Amino acid sequence: MVDDILVVGSGPAGLTAAIYASREGFSTSVVEGASPGGQLLLTTVIENYPGFAEGISGPELMDIFRKQAERFGAKFIGGEATDLDLSKRPFVVKIGGSTHEAKCLIIATGASPRWLGIPSEQRFIGKGVSSCATCDGAFFKGRDVIVVGGGDTAMEDSTFLTRFAKSVTIVHRRDKFRASKIMQDRALSNPKIRVIWNSAVEEIRGDEKVNGVTIRNLLTDELTRLDVQGVFVAIGYAPNTKFLEGKLELDDNGYIKVRDEVHSAITGVFIAGDAADPVYRQAVSAAGSGAKAAIAAREYLQSLG
Image 1 (tube, helix red, strand yellow):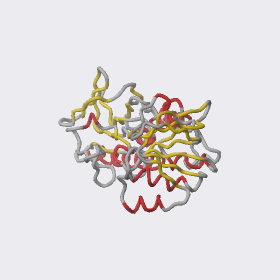
Image 2 (tube, rainbow, N blue to C red; image 1 turned 60 degrees about the horizontal axis):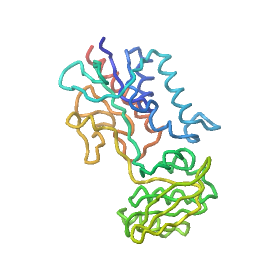
Image 3 (cartoon, rainbow, N blue to C red; image 1 turned 60 degrees about the vertical axis):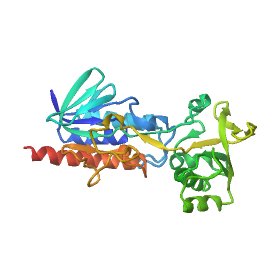
């Protein structure tokens, strides 16, 4: 069977695309990917997604998205897309040991945060460890937090967090930031922000939630304990586009290049969500791009007659 639309990815962008596409009567399948539901599965409470006045957990929100897509007839394929052939019609996508064909593709594979890689980190994700200051900053009102990183994202996150946190400490591996001067100046001039240079987080401590970190000075090997309630990792994101190398146009950081918001360089292949968005990375903006991609796909399929 050849689907009208195959959506690759099951985060907010992919599921919104599936809702729109299947509701219009197109045969639609969704490739769930390695993490069905995307990055929101790591978010305990979402308070800024419209329609949920009391907030909602990431897994709950994605479950609602999925059920809505299923209601309109969308099918789900377990596994991760590992290769695709865009040289012929219908398009062919390899998923595990099987292949699937579709007249139209919507790529919504998202992006994954780069983590520190220390054992205690994963245990506290959603319990004081976060990769998204704009998502979770409001939960840290009056608390002490650290931001790990030295680029523009770390500076921006640190400045943003001062709206809520009692104090923000930037921990950076080097003796200078790589961020742009204007972002550095903005952060360093904020009285709530201080910097620990030439250092790395050795361990994240806590019981049910984070209550401190151990920091190692990389020049002296000296260990320092710091009492904090939040750890924000801001060392970058990596788009989940490795399997698209040589298939679609990617920028130097691996993000898919788009035209007119959701069009790829190949007719019939559309892009949605964080795989093409290094700036906003919000559930609501990803969902919006998923809707746009589905509408563009509809127009394409209608043009085929």
